[in-house]
Image (cartoon, rainbow, N blue to C red; front, side, top):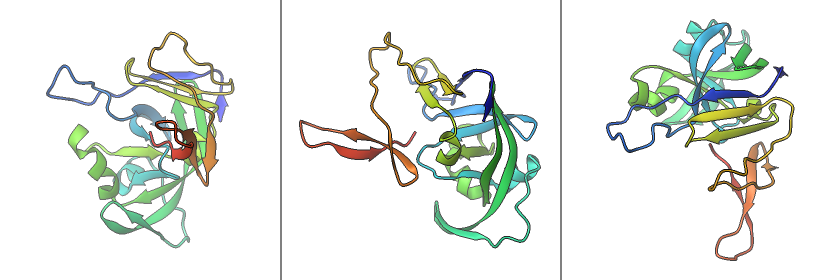
Length: 193
């Protein structure tokens, strides 16, 4: 991670027929990937990998790593073959991520999630393997923004009424917090943006 400062970027608005409903239902931002600006990127702490559809990877000039066998994985709708790739660079505001490991999979694997939002616009999924490299991540749906911490520790915004902080720990490769409901013993809950 190379960064001069924290990056504050807007969430991408998702069209809705109801003007009273929020326009920010999922954490999607725009980034510059491999020198191509305007790439929709889903911040997904529930995914342990960065994922592209074949078409988006090809449009961004990101080839599969030659000579490697496919990685068979359980995807949306069944078993799929994915291929390893290296993303040379991703720029999000003032933060640049370099040499990210990514997975190229069938277009349908990514499009099934986003087709209702932007027609056939593909989205790159930025998983926890990349998100772990930043200092912190704040998603503010009310303000429609994301703050990605470069090197500084997280400082909560005390002006927000509906916010809390909790220590983060890792369960395998995924982020988790302890949650207690109705006074019961705390249990770990995976955080999935």
